[in-house]
Each structure stands twice: as C-alpha cells, then as structure tokens.
Length: 380
Image 1 (tube, rainbow, N blue to C red):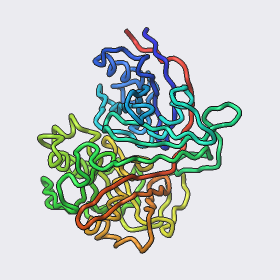
Image 2: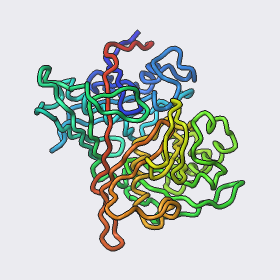
Image 3: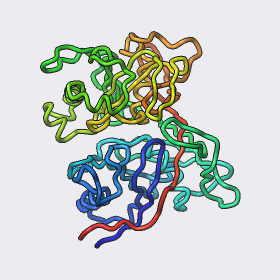
C-alpha cells in the first residue's frame, strides 16, 4: 500500500480530501489513480473509499504556497466522477474554496493576523483570484471553528467565512457572456428551440426556465434524478451549450469528456416548497427558485459557482431571469436563491458603463470544518 497525508474537510455544502501538493508525486500523471482509489471509484457505491456517491462529496483539493505577488496560496480542484475512472480538473468548486482558507491557516501556510486573517488565493482551474476571511481563535492562534453562522444544507452553526470571488467573469472562456448574448435560443435535438442564458462566472453555466422543460422548479433532487426524460433533455441542453462554448465537438463528446463544464440549471419564480430536510421554504424569503445539475445528478444545494452565475444573470437586462421575474428593485444588491436545502444569498458587484459590463467580485457567506486528518491508503 502507498500512503498519503490528507485532511478530510467540509467546505460549504461539499466535502472532500485536502492535500499538500508537496505530499503528492511530482509526476502528475500518477495523481488520478491516487484520487480515484481515495474515493473508491469506479464503483458507484464507492464502498472501498471515502467518496459519498454524489459529486458534492467527491472533491479533491491540492494546495501549495504561492510564489506569485499578492497571493498566499494556490489550489487546484479535482472532481472525481462517481462511477467512472475519471477526475475532472476543468472547473473550480466554490464550496470547497471556502475550505481552502481555513486549511491554509491551520496548516501554517499563511501569516496569521487577528481577529481575522484574509487568505489571498489563486485557483489554478480557472486562474481566478479569491479572498476568504478566516476568523482567528485568540487562544490557539488558528481557525476559530465555532460560531453562530448557519447556511442552508448544513446542520448547526459554525464560524462565518466570507468568500469573495475577484473578477470572476470569464473563468474558462474569457467572457462573462461566452456567446456574446444575454439571451440565446438553443436548438436541442428531438426537442426544438429553447430560450437560455449562458454565463461564465467562476464556472460556465447554462440556465433555462423550469416551465420550458415541463418542470415546476420546486422538485427535490430524487424526483428530478428519477425523471429520465428531463435528465436526458437537460444533458442535451448542457451539451449544446458546451459545443457553443468550445468545450466539446458534439453532444457525446460533452457527456464523455466534459461532464462538469458547463453546469446546467433551471429556475422559476419564487414558490413555497419543502426542502430535503422536510422544512418549509417560503417564497417571500427568495427572489427565485433554482435547481442545478452537477455531473448528471441534481445537486442537493446549489453549487456556489452556479449560484454566482445565477445571481449575475438576475441583474442583466433581458437575461432569461430578468425576463421571467423582472428587474431587481431600486437599491437591491443581493439575490436570494431558493434551492433543495434552503436559501442562499449572493452579493454580485456589477458595474455598468453603457453596454460594457464588468464584474469586480461576487461574494457569499459560507462555513467550513475540518472533519478528519490522517493518512489515506491506496494500492501500489
């Protein structure tokens, strides 16, 4: 057996294994077989590993000290594809990004300042900068894990982490609007035309109305996952957008070789619904209701990078969200997204200069926790 030091952490509503880059083989061609065994793939039950059978519980994060100016640490996210011998490095994970800041503090990778340390990070999936504010315990001089911050999809409370994605537009395509349009008409095989907005904020995403695909928008993940007709349609929509953005040559290529980029989601106007924990989510507490598909399955919350795209789309005139729920009210700066686990509030910073749109940052409140540290064993 080979063994590697790792820390198992929750970041936001995801969890996975954190590695120091220096603890991994210098030859990156060896990494995939390590990470796949770590999670227990290709068995979809992942019995022989740490994976949690859904994409949000199959994250790999590699972190190292940076030599770049004004950057403390750099990190790379690997998405283990459940049931396949595949690790996807095309996209960042916004939730696990929240874990990188506390991890860097706890591992002594950054200089501590009290009462809050701002960790300046560079994501190497997208080459985008992120800042995470980490509260410091005055006694331990490390991450103060306890606090009164609650986020939808996670039991209990913890210390508040403010995750700020700096200049997140065009993370993979170089453009906020990869097609050049706020609203696109997609030609979907065996379905016809459908309106969509395609954005690249932290990660690329394609968004359609729930009603246009025969859904209410309040369905819970299992109901969506069991609706094969809708899942197939959403994958065709995602694949069509992938081809338009240059990530795939055809729909099969998108499914086989770009399963995590772009994400696809659908939304509707605010509506009451019951969340996955049986709690009541009220329409008066949200601005829209959304569901996001992540690697062929409906996410049990809302991926943070997808929430970034959704929140920005809500402020773009003539986007599919704008057309459906209307323009934000005067003075409104936040977007409240209803998702299967509750409500997430996003704060996009959008600057309009004529027809030119710039996006200095998108911020969100998150929590994170170190669950376990030790050694993971993999076969030779």
